[in-house]
Each structure stands twice: as C-alpha cells, then as structure tokens.
Length: 180
Ligand SMILES: [Zn+2]
Image (cartoon, rainbow, N blue to C red; front, top):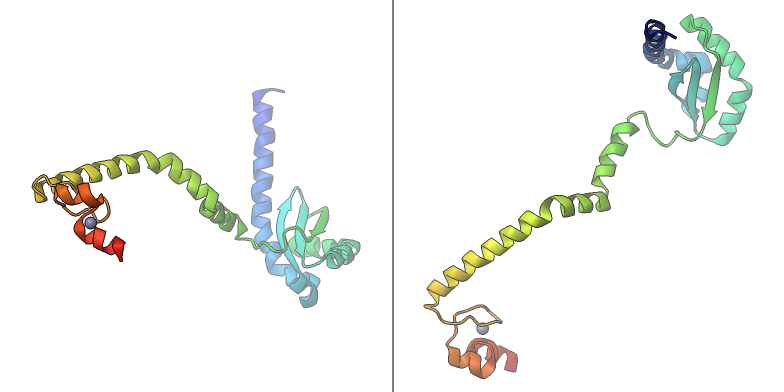
C-alpha cells in the first residue's frame, strides 16, 4: 500500500469520525422523539462509533428490553437522521457517569489525596526543608542578638541566665510551671 492510499484511507476514517461526531448531537436531539419519553428517561445516548450507537441505560432490565427492540429504534433513527447506523448497544456501565464525566474524572484524579501527596513530595519537600532551615538560622541569629548571647530555655525559647539552665535545664519560669 502506497503512502498516498494510506493517506486516502486515513482521510476517509477522519472524515467518517467527524461525520459521526456531527451526527451525535442530531441523534441526541431526536432521541426522545424516537424512543418516547418513558424510554428516554431510562436511557442516555453516549456516542456513535463505527455506525454503532452506544446508549447507557438505568438498569440491566432496560438494557435487555431495549436490545430486543433495537431494530425498531434503529429504523426510526436512520429514517429520522438519513443515516445507515448498523446497531445500538445498550449497557448500564456508563449510566452513573454523565457526559461531562471526562473532566470530572480528571479533576478528581489530580485531587486524589495520594496523588497530591506524591506530587508534593516530589515537588516541594526539598525547597521547604531549605526554607525551614534558613528561617531557623535567621531566627536563631535574631534571638542571639536579642538575648545578648544568653542561652535559650529549651522549653519556652526565652533567653535565660546560664545558672537557671544549669539548675533546672529550663528557665526559672518554666521550672516553676513544671513544678506545679
Ligand atoms: Zn522557659
């Protein structure tokens, strides 16, 4: 097969895909009219793929009943749309997901706790650690200046006379609190 004929075939596939994409909104428009309100309430056309209409149904019973009656629906559809669709497939599989599910699924996938956690671990841990360390060093320097070189109480981080820390391991205030 030459490139030219492959391109020709691909072109045909593309065109027919486009045609079926354009066809689908038309099918949606006449669906209620073709199947009637009671059936329309239990069904939702999903797509047209290779001249087969895929329809979600609310229950397995509906899928079964409509599968038996699909030739009639198909005839009406083809008449209405001037198409030559070959079949209709009914399935409960997609019933609980609406037509905008695609985007919803994508969003919820990225919002999934573990997905976000993985992302955070990969992206942010290193800079966070550096920032935290830098912030601590700055804070320690400031505290050292403020405390005129006095050691800090390990409990409340206040500048504390070395004698207090020697005696209680904390400042006198914290020592009093610990004794209470
Ligand atoms: Zn203290």
